[in-house]
Amino acid sequence: MTEQIKVINPSRSLCFYPSVEWATAELLPRLPLEHGDVILDPASGENAIAKVIKDFSNRIHVFSNDIDSLQPADFHFDMTLRESWKWIERSTGGFDWVIGNPPFTSAPPKGKRRGKPIVHLFVQMGYQYARKGVILLLSKSFTEPVKDRRSWFQTYSHEQFLELRLERIRTSYDPYNKKISSTNEVAYDWYGWQHGHSGGFVPEYIWR
Image 1 (cartoon, one colour):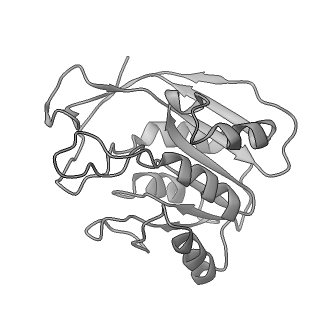
Image 2 (cartoon, one colour; image 1 turned 90 degrees about the vertical axis):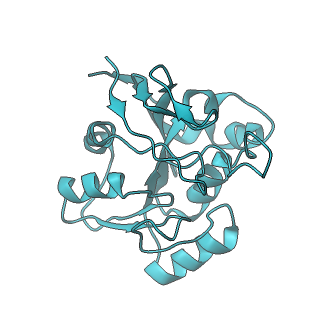
Image 3 (tube, one colour; image 1 turned 180 degrees about the vertical axis):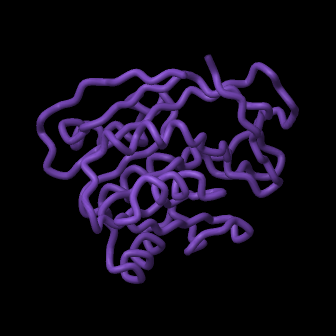
């Protein structure tokens, strides 16, 4: 069964698919979170992930960032830039985990259908600046060893500790054709990497 969600796609959209609450609720009990942990959601959108985290535990602090200044967030930085990660790190005193649903591509240039791939920047810089690790909702195709992430996979594949495979999420909007579609589906899973992890992982399968 797939879950129907509404995709908000304003003209400034960065391939924005809202995060369904059940996917985050399934994720959190499987993470090695500790009291006092600080989490950064680097592309928080409507704060769907942060809301579930806050309901899960009042002893975990969440900071949110979204490049869209009209979205409710603690910060509004372009997280494809290293300076943005450094600024938030200094402002918050650092964060233990990066958890979020980043855009796969940038906003398309005028006259173009798609923007350039940027999701690998969230993974790579999120992992660099987080004290403990990064967990992101990513397209199933993200694990393909294409050139913009091949080297990173080769270096950090042994530190992957989580792969939570989800059923496809059906959306009511096709962001590329910019029209309502009853058949458009998003194939995303949770992927996680933890500093110092060396014990491998067993993929889990979640459906509703």
